[in-house]
Length: 203
Image (tube, helix red, strand yellow):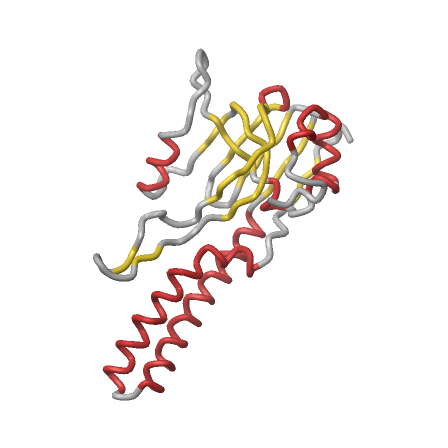
């Protein structure tokens, strides 16, 4: 097991798309109303709304394919590294892992959208469990402002200034605790498994 191993996400498309369901519902309602006005019928509005949602679903499907193809988890004797095709890279040495706990992965701004005083929704987040500790983080040259603010607010280690980073093992494999990923954790940090969420590793 001392030879490094690589793993790719096994997140299903329904789980990936679930956080975007509220905005999709709002988008459908808006398109339904506009379509009904433009076509003069509720059936026409429903068709326009369904078409709009279908287009967005195709966009999400493309993002899901890019995620599964471009994200790689690398486990080795020196620690854990997670990188994706956009240029994000997180590295966590085994000795610097402080716990296994809940990890929230956001793929869109947490700000609510909608009409002030009316229906307002926001995209949710993928929630799982993973490794948390003081590590290293590399970012692509350009990232959204909301993400930059979020990363700037994370705790840092006293003395070193290293940021607290998280690696969402549950997003890569819902059953990680019982599989090869869990075997790596048991080999190098067996003390952490007592804080694992469950035998299946599900959140």
